[in-house]
Structures are given as structure tokens and as C-alpha cells.
Image (tube, rainbow, N blue to C red):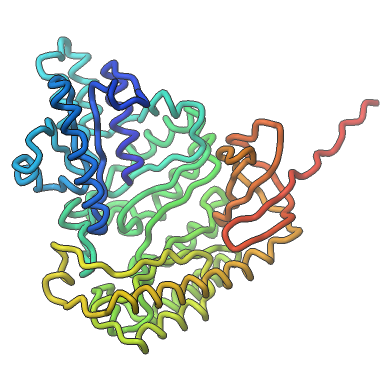
Amino acid sequence: MNVADSQRVGSSLEHLGYTLTETIEEADVIVLNTCVVRQSAEDKAMGRVTSLAPLKKKNPNLVINLMGCMVGVRGAEKLREKLPFVDVFSPPSDPGPLISHLTQGEVQSLEDAETTRRFLMMDEELILPVAEQGKLVSAHVPIVYGCSHACTFCIIPSKRGGERSRLVGDIVSEVRSLAKQGVKEVTLLGQIVDRYGKDIPDGPNLAALLRVLHEVDSIERIRFLTSHPNYFDDDLIQAIAELPRVMPHIELPIQAGDDEVLANMKRGYTQQQYRDLVAKIRSQIPDCSIATDIIVGFPGETEEQFMETYRVLSDLKLDVAHLARYSLREGTVAARRMDDNVPEENKLRRLHILDDLQEQILGEINKKYLGETVEVLFEDQVKGRWRGRTPTNKIIFVESEDDLRGKLIPVTVTWTGPWSMQAVLMKQPELISI
């Protein structure tokens, strides 16, 4: 989400005549876009913004903009006291305060005013920043802002506010504009993406949006994240199964495998319900990959409860497991009502146990690709090799002297590991002159 927000800000600034500089001392405007999902992220952001104070002292005309979850929807006043050298405080996903600050008294015509309004409303096409034009293969498109679910461990609802779905027409307009700029793949974003449209009376759901976006020319692949098990319904499963451009890769966090821990997290489902959902998805989308999120060491988690999580991961053999140790986050329900009583050494040990298990699972899953032909969308080069992704979001590297950026090419897998694979391009048939 922050990547998409930063692109929007960059696009807005370039419209006003600014250009990107890689040298911070040359900047007229500095935007620090922040994440505070974990306390460590907030501490890092505070340290980074504080380090900008000497630049402001040296150049009083420098405009410093603090943006994102650190500001939140209601946090600007307290931050102004702590950070008097910061000129502008912007809530998440909103370049409006910065653009308004920079254009005060400068909007000379109705045309300029209308263009500025478009940027502030964020309801029109997105022109990518110059540095990304012609180079960006895959782009992020927010479709629902904020969150109204409020898991007990999560700070996002209080920082980003309640969920707000974008209109279908605005999303389609943005995707079309990205396609015209060479983007081949879009990833639809939401804190709980499968709740898209639920805040709009008689509004569309995610499945309906996918069906509309599937018709946008030049977009080869559509992905979405992150889903919640409670809202992943049959209509959505059917849409993924039916639409060739919607990739069979699903982000479906379980967070924990024990029912009591899940209840304490306020997740709203049981371990068995999660297992049943995975089984249903796999029965209707046989070749899909499923990713999950897991938190170890949640307040009160016993060793046996942790082993329930271990058994779920071992049984389901999911393609990706994003693992994290629980850390107390001020402002959450868990921080107010629960003791962070699992020792750090236990959290770390449990994390390593799951990490080792998942590495073994991934090695087994990826080994099945050896010798297989898969279609890869190539994104960029890393250390001289082209990097791309399969429909199931597996990373594949290929050596080629050709420019593969943005190309969708079949490859044959020659080596597999738990985290990536290597392949060679399929030999194209030679043209025979008659």
C-alpha cells in the first residue's frame, strides 16, 4: 500500500514541475512515507525523520512532509509538537496536504484547479513517475483503504481509519492508464481486500470487480491481497477459477492454529474452518498456491497451542508462510488487555521451528516444477539474470542476453530450491523458408 501511495505522491509532484533527485541534499521537497505495523518500524521512522532536522536548519526553504501510518488519521497535532521542523503531515494514502501546501496561491486557472483536484481526489488515471515509466511491469492498485475488522494485535484500523472502497470506474480508469504505460500486471490492494464493496450499499464485491478488470486490454495478470478467511466466498473462488488473467495465487492469513488463540486475536474463525476453506479452494482451483501469515508468541500462547499451529502448517503445506514474532504494539486491544507473557527466547525458538518446517515444505513443493514448462512474466534483472514470476507467484531466474522485461514467456525449469528456481527459455521453432 505504501508503494502505491508513494507513486501517487511522486506523480503529483512531477505534475507540479518537480523532478526526482537521488541526492537528498539537493531536494526541495522530502517525503517520508511511514509504516508503523510494528513498534520497530515506528522507531525507525522517528529516527529517520529526526535525522532530517539538520537539512532543514541548513535550508529553511526545504519542505519536509511526514506521511503515512505514523501520522494516521488523527495523529498530526501530537507530532507537530515533537517535530516542529516538519512542514506538512499527511494521513495515509492522501497527498492532498502536501499538494495544497506547495500550491498555495499558485493555482492560476480553472484548468490548474481542476487538475489539482484530480490529484487530491485520486479518482482519475495515474501517470507513473518518470523514473518508472516504461520500466514498471507490475503495479499496485489500492481498491479499499483502511480497515474495519480490528484484530486485537493490529494497529491499522486506528491509523488508517475505517474501510473505504473506491468506485469501480475509478479503479478501471487507473488500471487502463497503467496498461497504456506498459504495465502488464496489477495487484489489487486492501488491508482486507475481499471486503471490497461491503461499505457501499448494494455495492460490487471483489469477484465482480475482477470480472470487470479482466476485460481491460493489455493487462496480462491480475492479483490481489490480502484476503481474510471470513470473507473469501464461493463467488470469489469461482471468479479465480474462471478468469484466466486472475492468477491462482491467494494470500490467506491464518495467524495461529489454535482456536483459543484465534479467538483472543478476534479473527472470527476456527482452525477447522480455515482447513475446510483451503480444501474448498484447492478442489475448485487445483493448481493454485496459497500463502499465509502466522504470529508466534501471542499473549498466553502455550507450547501445545503453538504445536497446533505447527500441525496446521505441516498438514496444509502452504506455498508461503510469512512468519513473525508477536511484539507489543501500543494502541492495540492486545496491548491494553493482555500481558505479553511469552518469553522472547520462546518466541524466537518457535519462529525458527516454523521457518525450518516451511523451508522443507517449499523444497518439496518446488521440486515438482523440475523439468516442467511454466509461463513467466519477467520483471527485472538481478545480478545479470532476468527475474520473473509464475502464475502461482514462484520466483524464477533465467539467463538471457535479450531484453525480457515485461514479456510473458514459457520456460523450462532446470533447478529448484525453497525460495527460487532457475530455468531456460523454451526454444522457439525455427522458421523455414520455402
